[in-house]
Structures are given as C-alpha cells and as structure tokens.
Image 1 (cartoon, rainbow, N blue to C red):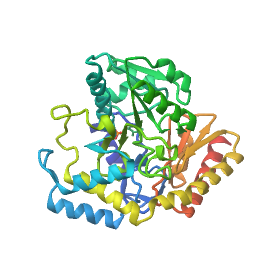
Image 2: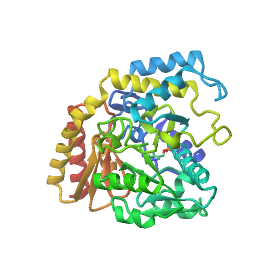
Image 3: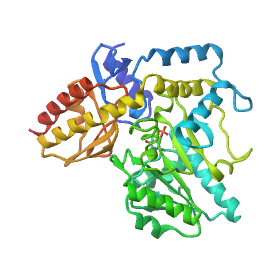
Length: 398
Ligand SMILES: *Cc1c(COP(=O)(O)O)cnc(C)c1O
C-alpha cells in the first residue's frame, strides 16, 4: 500500500493521542527496523525500552510460535506451566516472593497501589490512607497510575483522580520525610526516572526512603517498568543501591514485545491481596508468560547483562564526547543503557533530523534525548548513532 495513503488512512481511524513520525515500519532485524519501502533505521528507542533482545531473535520467535500452537489463553482459574516458570524467574531475579501478571505497566502500578491501600486497611481498619509519590514521575495512563504521576498536565484534565496522593521532590529526602504521617501507606517512585528526564535516584535518597518506610511502617513501591529487566546493568536497578522494595512493578522488556507486566511483592505486602481482591482475565496467560519465561532464559543464554555492562561505558564516553562538542547540550545523566542528554532547547527537531540520518531516538520530556537501545547493542551501533546525531545537531543548530 502507498505510504502516504496508509498514513492518511490511519490518521482517519486512529484516535489522535500521538503525534506519529511519518514512517511506516514493516519488520526488524537485530538492531535495525525497516520501512515497507526498505528504508533502514538503527533503533535507539527499542519501542520505548521494550525490545531488549533485538528484532528477529530466532529462539524467542520459535518459543512463541510453539506456544501459539499449544495454548494461548486459559484464564486464571487454572494452572499452566509458563505462568509458573515466569513467576519463578521474576521472584529469583527480583528478590520478591509472589507475582501477579498484568497486561501492561499501568496495570502493574494499579495493582501495587491496591496492595498499599489493602495493607493500610488491614493494619488500621481505616480507609484514609495516603501515598507519597514524586515530582516528574511517570507511572502510566490509567486513573490510579495518572494519580501518582508527577506531571500536572497528565493529571489535571482527568481530575478528580484517586485521592490521598502527596507529591515530594525526587532526590530530596527531607521533602519525603515532611509528607510522612500516620496515614502514609506507601511511597512510590521510579528507581531511575524515565519519562521525567532520565534521573537516577541518589544512593542516599533511596536508602533514606527505605529507612523512613521501615521506621514508619509504610511500603516502598519501586516502579522498574522502564529501568528494570537488565537495562541498567543489573536485573533491577535497586540491586545496585543495596535496597529492596516491598513491591516492584515490571513491564516493558519483561515480554520483549508481547504485552505483559507484573507486580511482585515480598513479606507482608505479598500476602495482603486475597481471593476476590484483584484479578485479570488475560493477565498471566500462557502466551504472555511464555514470552516472559523465554526472555529470562535468553538473558542468561545470550549473556545480555554482560553486554549491558560491557557497553554502558562506551555509550557514556561517546555521549560525553558529543556533549563536549555542542554547547547546546547542558547535561548527561543515566545508568547503564538508560542515558539522557539534556539540551538548552526542545529536542523535537533534533530527534526528527536524526531519523532522517537513519537513527531512531526518542525524547524524555521536552528537552532531553533518551538513549534506550536494545540491550544486544554493539560498539559499531553506538558509533553509527553518534554519527547521525552529530549531523542532526549541526543541521538544527547551525
Ligand atoms: C512506560 C511506563 C509505565 C506505563 O507502562 P504502560 O505499559 O505504558 O502502561 C509506568 N511506569 C514507568 C516508569 C514507565 O516507564
């Protein structure tokens, strides 16, 4: 089908919730995506930190195909092997004890919020709980997830949202402490803020929040939907801080393209939800769980974490050298293969120009370019991205 006709047709029937780039993607191979007309792009966005294993990963594809022929869906009234295997893998990798599978990240956040409310209700018999969330956070687009999202523009048009949410300043422990009182059921935050502009937690901050939660009997919910699943060099970013949450939310790379998320918990937080409290028709179906199970297996077999740790410094050094060349770049932050360059201007034009030079990047907020490639990346891909980005910045700023 003609590309322009397709784009026009799609715009006429899809809701206008996205400003899409004018390309029509058809297939992928390794680190590259191809348009229907064959135009090739190096992918530094991975479908928003989803496709960790690279496109066309044969073992991953074969595992999914075999599950398609066996069983796609059963509901959660019965057991199935992939759900058990995937849950075991999530627990082993995260240090959690029980898992609930969802169909998206936002749903995982909803579940974590329900644990917090139920925990407080069990403890106090009251329903006046509050939850502390962070400025500049992003937790998804459903009503509960929007309620704890720090960006006012995502919240205000949809108010009234769920009540009892208080916002603290990220990486400012005193601001969290000031919001604590007897009604605090939980603190929710990203270990590395993603959409908000790629801000890793300071070590003192995250440890301090953990300590506050312990002292005051509140749960710590870490949202690792973007920064988890190996992206920062450990399976979960909190493992680099020596901190364990009570509840973790996971999605994006968990299924590497098949929609699956999870919330996992330990200790009392793993026990508060009982039959009747929560459910999902699709959540944790054999197909989605086969994807998650296979992702964990291939992370081991294809040495994905080793590659992240081998490549993170190369990406860091490359972006540092680009930053040194362009005064419009005013910051460089990140952890592992989740890095961002902050500009003194909106980055939309630079992202578009980089795409014309054959590399897909995405922004995080208005003025940060985010680098979240598939985790199987090699040095040659970083070099290729750097070349496209340099050319694009020159074009846009000179
Ligand atoms: C993407 C994201 C979500 C929402 O996930 P969806 O699958 O889009 O619902 C929640 N939290 C964080 C940190 C995310 O990056």
